[in-house]
Amino acid sequence: MFYEKVYEKLRKVPSGRVVTYKILAEVLNSKAYRAVGSAMRKNKNAPVIPCHRVVKSSGEIGNFSGEGGVKAKIKMLEKEGIKIKNNRIIDFEKVLFKF
View (spheres, rainbow, N blue to C red):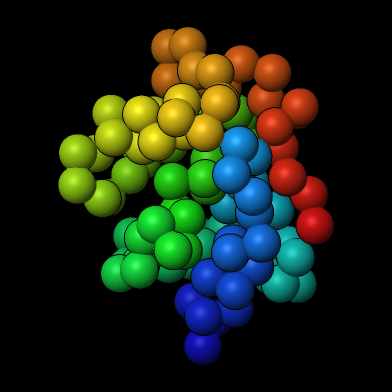
């Protein structure tokens, strides 16, 4: 049930924007940041549920369990217009989505 709530919120993050594991947990009144990460790993409906848009609070890309790993995640984000250098989002605050 928690995963479904995470996915429901994540669907609201538009193309060209990112959200953090922490923000997703907090919007669900939870501190289960790691559980949000587990939900991303178990997401079987990408890219409908855009787990590639979930990043670390530091602006780092983080992991990606989808096909192609982190390199694929970076390509998807760049295709949406997000600029990345050294596995970190440039202008992180400008592309960060807040509910």
